[in-house]
Length: 392
Image (cartoon, rainbow, N blue to C red; front, top):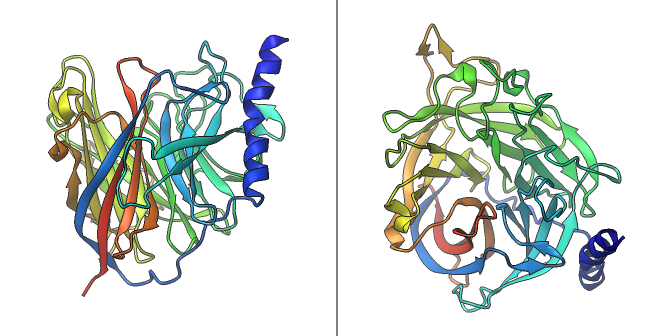
């Protein structure tokens, strides 16, 4: 009885938030981004650390794998990748967060948690413990959220990846169909474990939902290693029709450091900067025992990519044929920011969104890390300023 009462009290924070903000979440589409754009400069505006173990609304803040900006309300919504199977019994949820950038910098005290909302599997039915792996989260132009799950190929039965649309009360309103090439059999087809739909965002006009596999599908060649990269797919949906409309190949780089225990590199976020196929892709390498990333082994970089001239592979089920990659043109890729250059410890960064514009017209990039609820890690908010201009 105490556990039930505690959970209701914790989630009652949502009611207070609803009274405070009154209206459902609304994204503000930008209809002026049809021309190609490019990042010409970036600047670090600061970081804020939330210690592991911090409690809000009766839940532990952590696992923040994605973040999205609610421009109409001036707040952010951050998804926790808690699968509902931790000893704390916290539910699958997202947090509503205030981030004060009025002075053009991110300083201690600028990040405040103001709400927590449970996400349900269907209507009022909670997710079964371990029934998903929530990773991507974005606010659609209709005021709905989209959420992606990586699934779990080691579960019995296998849990498939999904992308669903939610209302602001955490209830499912639609399912987006997942191409069969992504549906895993656990051995040689579909997504690999923990390398599925890590990313999720909208194009500025609100007409497309963009996600990506973190790494290669089984049939698309080997996963990344210290010696070689891999081929990941960027998948584009029509937001109104909820149907896949295009797909492009992104070349993931090798691990930044070797590891005899565990290493990985892949796409953790895709953020469109225009409606012409240009996006920011955040790539994160992690090597156990690594010394880069300020000693954490996390090496994170942001690349500008363009789908202009790239091969649309939506109708191609396998990118490898006879042990070799097929002929195709991947998206172009240009480094625009390396977090290792900051000279500070970098945690397991996974989420990125545009925040409010600065007075000088630059865009703010708000970035968050997933601390894995690990006492040796931390939840990290980082803000960059990006000067984004139309391509001449």
